Amino acid sequence: MLNTLKTLCLLNGTSGREEAVREYILGRLAGKAEVTVDPLGNVLAFVKGKSRAKNKVMLSAHMDEVGFIITGITDEGFLRFDAVGGIDPRVVVGRPVTVGEARIPGVVGIKAIHLTEGDEEKTVPALSKCLIDIGAADKEDAMRHVCVGDAAYFVSDCKEFGEHKLKAKAIDDRFGCAVLLDMIEHGVAYDATFAFLVQEEVGLRGASAAAFTVEPDYALVLEATTAADVAGVPDAEKVCLQGSGAVVSFMDRSTVYDRALFKDAFDLAREKNIPVQTKTTVAGGNDAGAIHKANGGVKTLTVSLPCRYIHSATSVADKRDMAACRALAEALLDRWAVC
Image (tube, rainbow, N blue to C red; front, side, top):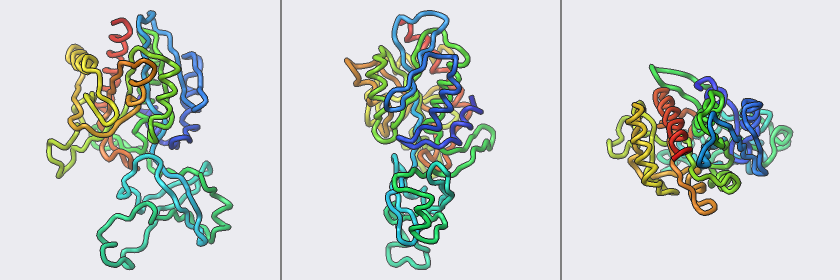
C-alpha cells in the first residue's frame, strides 16, 4: 500500500483534471472489478467478495488534489493564477510548480522584500498578488507553452523520513485511493462498491453523483484530516495526533455523523486492537457531506488519516496511522455488509 501511495502522490490531478490518477487506478482495477466511469469522471468499481452482502456498502476516496488554475498572462510573460481548493497563501510563495500537461516548470514569485513598503513586509500577499514565472520572454512566448485554464501543481518528491513518517503532496486524498486499491487487490469478504471520486476539493461534486448512482445503505469515506500536533499549538487545538491511529469524526462542517456508526467504529477498534482516536474539533468537511444526503439518506462515516501541513506541497503522514485506517476500513465493511 505504501508504494501505491507514493506513486499516486506523484501524479497530478486537481479538481476536474483527475485524468492521470483515474488512468492509473483503472489500470490497477483491470480484471478485478466491474468498473464504470460516469460522465463526471468518477470510477465506480463493484467488487464481488467471498460472500454476498445483505446491505449495499460503498467505500469512497477522492482522486483530486488542491492546486492552481491559470487565469491570465501578463505582457511580461508571467502567469496569473487562482487556487483550486482551499490553499493557504502562506504555503505558496516561492514554491516550484509545474504548469499544464507538459509540466512546464515555474516558480511562484512576489515583489522582493527589499521593495516592500509599510505593512507589505509584514503581511502574506493574496494569490492575486502572486505570479508564476516560467522564464518566458514575454506574453507571446508564454502563450506558446501555456493557455488560460491550464492547471498548475506543487512540485514535491515523496520521501520517508524519521522512523515512521512520509512526506508528499496530495496525501489528501491519494491515501484513501491507496487503501481502496489495497483492499480490492487483497480481496474482500463481502460484495462492495469502491468509489474513486472527482472534485471533492471544490464542493463534493463527484460524491453527489456517485451516491445517487450507487444508492448505498452504508457509506465509508476514507480521507486525510488536519493534524495540528506541532510545537506551539495548545492541546485542545491539535485536532488529532499522529501515531495515535485512525481518526473517526463525530461532526464536521458538512456532516453530523451517525451516532451508532461512530460508536460501532470504536467498538470494532477495541475488539480488533486497532488504534483509533476522534477528531476533537468541528472543522473541515469531506465527501460525506454530499453522500449522507443522497437519495433518501445514507448512513455514513468518515475514517481519516492524521495529516500535518495538509493542502500544501509537503504534507506529512505516519505509516502506523495508515495501517490503522486500512484495518478499520476492512472491519467496518465486514460489519456493515451483514448487520
